[in-house]
Length: 351
Image (cartoon, rainbow, N blue to C red; front, side, top):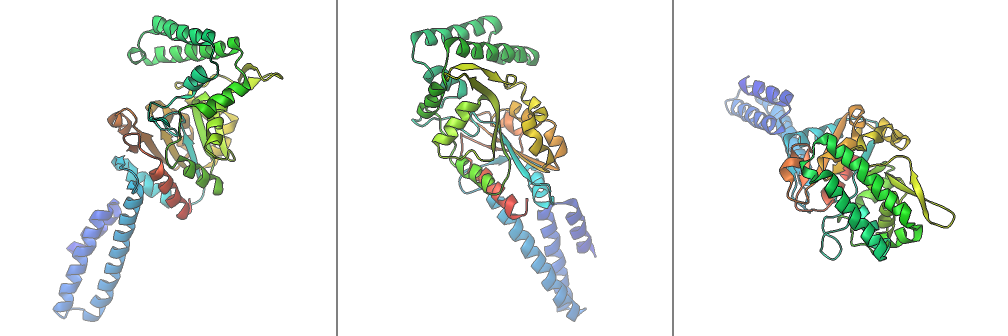
């Protein structure tokens, strides 16, 4: 009776490990009763059933943890990670959706040549024009920024929003003044040092094959993001990019930007964008980012979801900060393989 209570308390408490211990104790008790000749016929059946259940629980737990941690990379997790994994597998219907940042999340911190990879604005600034006038203009922008605001990490949240509003508007204005062309942007995406994380293309294709919406919410440029994906041979079908989208005139010269500015401190507005509509009807979210602010891209969407698994990518050793907000963190500029394996498991479970 005592061992039975241990098992049921452990089972309803939700701890698989403790439940397994309860099963083992209960099985031992039944075996002892069998040896003493007490309820011998029934003991055989009960013991067999208990050991079978225990084996299945142990196998399921071992398999799940093996897939979650993956053979490709280490993964730092907090307790909520396993809770969300179980929710993702238990929830029936409603579908799955992936919402992710781009720079330093889908792309690696290290570039193709091993140096620091370029982010979207770097790509345009460095490669969209080679004239000295353009280089001087960008240099002046950074100097003006430092003079106006000082170090970004010392700013309050309110001042950071002001910084982003001002800087993104100024940067876009510089591109308009200089007459950046569509062809120059395409060429910049082709020649840049940026590379996708290993396993990223596989994750996107997996989502495409199963009609899982794949949203990229970025403070960069739609044209650059799509250009890099195409360069890497990743089809754009089913990939929705919410970023700063360039508009070009009949001559192919930049004429403006479609919609409002997207920067790191207003990603929460994505929930109100028409592009986000398909995500609002999905009960499972996989959220990827390399900064805490990236989680704001699913503000509102996460409230509608039954389960939301958040995986962060630590590029600069900021694992502890990310782990206080994400369910799991891939350290040391690691690959995307583990996330791809998790999505694959959710799909096999009917997610």
